Length: 140
Image (cartoon, rainbow, N blue to C red):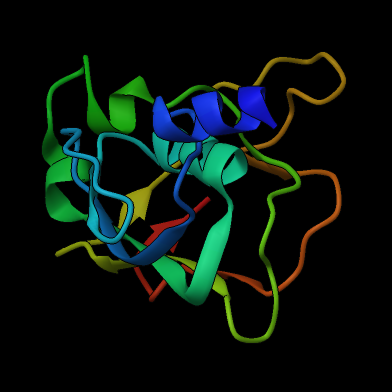
């Protein structure tokens, strides 16, 4: 009990993600809405924190596509991975949408030839109620 209380009050208790979070090429995190630099950063936060009531939507913005090579699209790994996260359900869906882009993005990295490295997006583990919405802007 003492360790739980200490962990909770020291900030180690992570608040589940809810609301709309933009993926912009710059980080400014807030659990109920904010922004991530990359899709990987958003997915890592989702796997660590889970999704809360009402769900979460990640909106890829134009600045993610046009930012310099140290952040945004160019900073994404060859394979963006999403695995099991807590809280998924019909009342807490997760959506990744490219609707914030002004133009089509050709999102293809140079995947490795090793097993597990041949994907742009790789979904593993157990999860549901996840939508990948290319919004007519994503070509992989």
